[in-house]
Image (cartoon, rainbow, N blue to C red):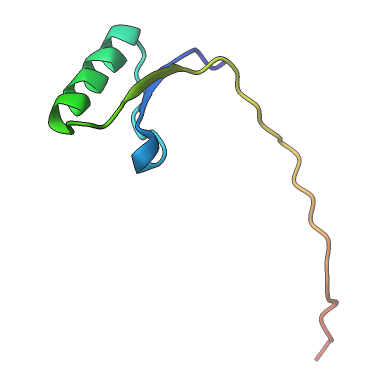
Length: 67
């Protein structure tokens, strides 16, 4: 089972890369990044749900010819 976690996101620089288990860790990272990048905004975000699909469906588009 997954547990909740936090990420720090800057909309100007793509997807979050680090997963934080505690809010205070994510907040400290957001503050560090904001200090190193004046004028940019860093959001602390909480994962509230997860979705996944376990089914993989393959269909053949071409039948190979026998040699």
